[in-house]
Image: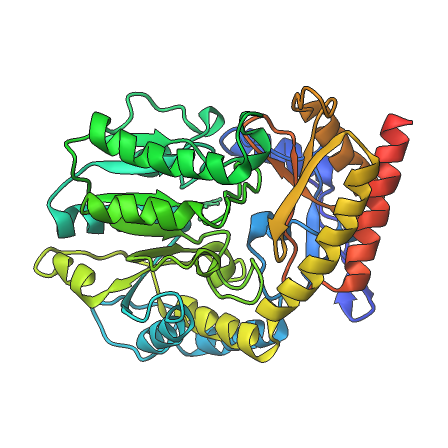
Length: 450
Ligand SMILES: Cc1ncc(COP(=O)(O)O)c(C=O)c1O
């Protein structure tokens, strides 16, 4: 067991007095499954407040990755902490086998937020995670349509169960052969990597029509459903052309399928102004799959759908122990309240627009930045070896992450090739934070490339 130092109180906070990062790593390796960690010397996060975290040595960092796109309203947001604590003092846990008002209160609040995407959405089921939400969304499609074939997208990520892994379009996240039958993956509308002979619009049309081609040639012609992220998050912040998802939607509907929007990363205001990412594309989803920002880090997910689709589970036992328990429900309600009262979806748009403009300016001067893309505070910076070949530079991405840490800024990385920097901070991020991030990125690239 690792040593524990004495905790000292500074600035109203108890200074971290626990085992060091190195000791904790050893301890974890000895006691837990093998786990991936960021950085050559993994970082210990000792404390968080809004868009900042502190390490074991008391150093403060700007957190621009938000615990993998999860801390939405800010680390330890005071209102969310207060509501969770109050609920914990009253009742931590019971299940939906009993009644408690916190559950319908949170569901009603969530329905109010998702209605602009599709006014017909009127039933919520809370899960424990995004993976479980994906799984339930597909179960609903099967129950409602009586069919079992699905279309997903390449470069996507939907979770870690067999079905969600089968729907995931990156080999790095698929390792559990044999996958489930009946799932086909269509090309993502990855404009930056389109054939040079096509305009972005032509490529979007071609990609969307591949969904129809797959339905025509690789399924029975009728499908249970389609799943897509409005912007592929883990896959490298891939933003489709505006014409793409409406055309996909038509093909899915023509084949009798339900449309699932995976909002685990894009939801809760992250893409700016709209509560759900799918609102950017004007498609009315049948099922919404959520998690991450919905709980601001508290483990909760949700599936939202129409009453008619939800009713397809009537008469079949459907239950989980923790999903939407009283504390989780109180947290969801508080997070949504903060999103509204602090106008965080709008802040995401304003600060995101400011930040992407600065990043694009940088990219124009540096051919190693192949592409800058995203919406709101869901941004990606794709690093390449040179502008002509666009060969992905995963090593540079890893080195930039390390260098940014030294500058006091945490970012993430993703994409099948591991070469896209992911900038997805808590939605309370400010323009001053954006300036600090861009300065740190500029310094890091200069240090590595000059
Ligand atoms: C788009 C998307 N869907 C689903 C999931 C799975 O969510 P969870 O890790 O909560 O199971 C993730 C996780 O990163 C995700 O990014």
